[in-house]
Image (cartoon, rainbow, N blue to C red; front, top):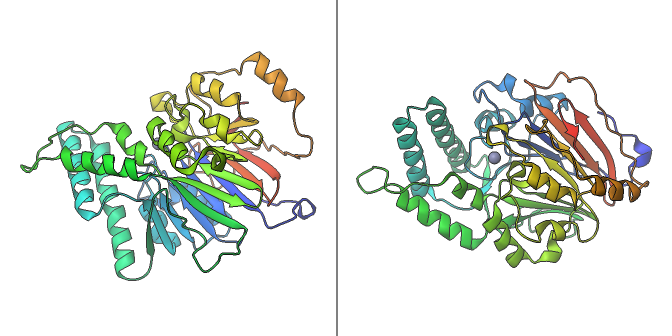
Length: 373
Ligand SMILES: [Zn+2]
């Protein structure tokens, strides 16, 4: 990939959202040249050569990551992460800030019991992968090879304390203390002392402790929403305050579900101008929904999708007219609808969005990623 140098006033910040209609992976190139990955999805987790994230990084000549971040323990966000860590040896592993090892044991045991009860191979494979991932993190910390950072809404993982003058920073907005408390209580209660399932864990409970990251680079602000759902967002709004949620780009949370935002959230995202929205569909659950896209398009400048949504969605006519009239001609957006590049494994699309300190530089779309608004 080449970016015309004349258009760049400061080192670029690159955001690449990858998705094949199931899970998602986000690759970041930070302005200081370091690379990070937030979540990872590979349908064949042990096959590195089928991992779109790995192939993309190799294609860009990356041999080492600065960080890998796990937003929450759902397999559409962690399958393939173990192999990714082994290959790119990140200096830091960031993870949702709940669950000490005793709780993790309970969660894994619960997942194994559910998998056994439903005789579901995919579920037991996920439980095994999650166990492996936590073991890799623990061993990395034990051997001093990887710093493990547990994120919550009061954590600023980058840069570290010694680099206060940086114009670039990554803050964590979620999980809030309240959601962590509720989640850990549910994890303890889900398995009884007899080692049997005691209380059902709703799948959505894991979303409420999803990490949300806010990346600030001068005037550029990017919010990566993870899979956070409504109640978690309400707590974030209360805790961080509405004015801290203005953004230039949003990775839409929870694959564009009706529950992926709370009242007033998108109004806050767009308070200083309409952001670009990027969604990574999860087709099995019918995500994104038309209802969520219709809501988002009232506040977003554009919506890009890593994969075509399942249901055909057309933005309301009135919205299209207003947005077209207010398009900012200062933004030179080049949209490349090109043939599938070599690094892609399967039908994984990529939305690449490049910023400098003050503005959008470029949007890149690799098939089947597309602009949907
Ligand atoms: Zn997900």
